[in-house]
Length: 147
Image 1 (spheres, helix red, strand yellow):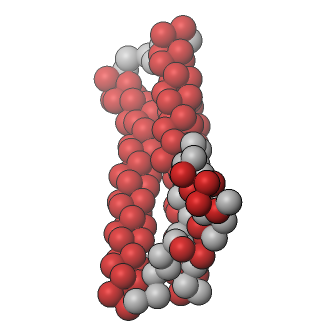
Image 2 (cartoon, helix red, strand yellow):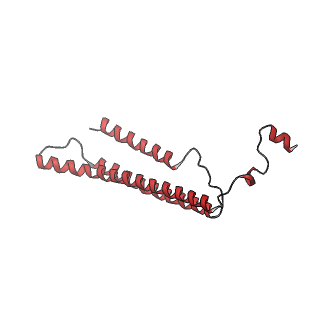
Image 3 (cartoon, helix red, strand yellow):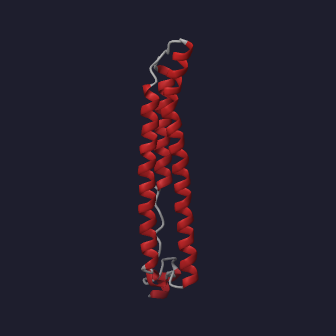
């Protein structure tokens, strides 16, 4: 009966037991280094986005100073750039905390000898991309329609 199940293309009943576990120290070290590299990539990405948020937040102050020096009135107050920049910085803080939490969970699973779980559709990168796209749309609408 078991041979018939395997012949149809169904996995054996003990597929979980047959899956290789990262017990060997070279494999465990390789997986830990890959996890560390992934965390460092998230840190780099968040730092870059935080820097952009800072520039965006300070751009309104720059415009106000330039208009005061040239005695040119601003068409709109620069307060929205402060809000958008601060929102971007806070989003990146949340993203970085989530990346650290996922890293700790992955390293914990590796140390216990468990198989690392494969992410689903909504990975951290996908969530960040969707939120940044929404923020970009809000900024584009603000620039286009608010006078």
